[in-house]
Length: 126
Image (cartoon, rainbow, N blue to C red):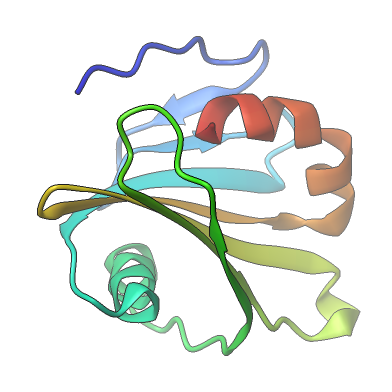
């Protein structure tokens, strides 16, 4: 499947880690792109993707929602993780399934960055 999109102005594509990532202009918002085999348990798929980029990841799920799949996607989920309020940040996984593959976008950023860059974030992970 081909997915064409433009990198928003000021964002940086980073291929130095275990998965490609886009980093926001202020450096306080990152979106990773992870592809994995999928299983019946979407939380396990998302957790395995997080462990790819952060082996110490241990945040707890506070909300999981199945969303209407669009385009060629068979299933679409959004998972929100619990982060201590004092950290003022968001951890989120968007999992899309197609065939035997799961395409996972992991989002980690300050609450302010997600608010400030929400439209760009939505464009990148749609």
